[in-house]
Length: 430
Image 1: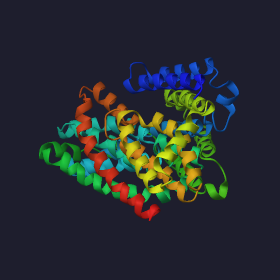
Image 2 (image 1 turned 180 degrees about the vertical axis):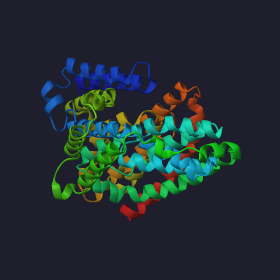
Image 3 (image 1 turned 135 degrees about the vertical axis):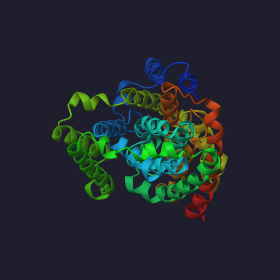
Image 4 (image 1 turned 90 degrees about the vertical axis):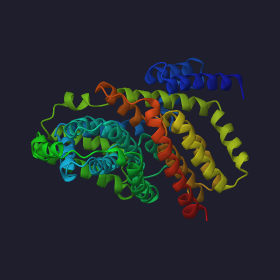
């Protein structure tokens, strides 16, 4: 490699280390790394901002932006508080039944929205219900974080790594439904059983507390019924447009932006109020990350890594697939799966082309998605949803330590990734 390529790698690894160790805010690390890449001419403004292959992936940015605005409006209706109280009453105040319902709600919501947004909305309500039942919210929060990562893996919009993979691999919303969702349903059944083994036997049922929960009226949580129906209608249209992409030929980013625009324009929610719910730091973080990875493509680093990967697996797709699944799970357990997937996706793109393009080689995209999404459950820093949950727990006076989360996460990740391996083998490699 050239001197410029080595300097680019050093700058990227330094930024990655800062992101992983959280020595500085991840947005500062990503922007600093992007700035260095531009400063040393590893990339330039044209390549960073306008190139389809080495620049900021605006489809990812605007898809997230549109969905964040939609969820911001939906949050104002109180529907998530309604669901939490409804779940507590349906569980008859029994803690494990409540955990199962909250886990399933979290998984489904994460598939439709995104996992970070879902835990932001579900976690605070969990404290309310757990306080009424006089049980520790910690097991519930850990289970919800993991369920959000598993459920979010089912769809294109459910987990940020999936959005990156879809954009790089030319995959549609329906592709994820066909290839990821069936196995995710199986994994959720297994996860519920694991929740009983890991948490369920420690719960104690308090009839008096359960009676207090049964006295709550979930209908009082709905703050604006008209806005709720408007929001649900727009969300349903957006999801339908995602599914009908092969017919409509609108990119998911365009659909999300149109849905957000219609919802803000057609309701009484102020524009400032809707925009305030957007996670701007997350969007800026993505932009900086794309610039850094694009610089590695520009300097030839990604190309050489992909050639080395092809050589190491000797052109054997089964070895490449299993190595990618396991390796992605391990690395995503150590660092946030978002920067990992942003780095790996151009490598996998070239591996897919080497294995036969969008035919048999497409299994590599699913191996990357499963490995990164499920590997994010292994540790407290493996996925953005985990970090968010730990932050909420700390602010509410019930901190969850790194190892308290990780001792459960390693078990869940080990079981789920092990189950995915035969699924990929039997469906794509036989």
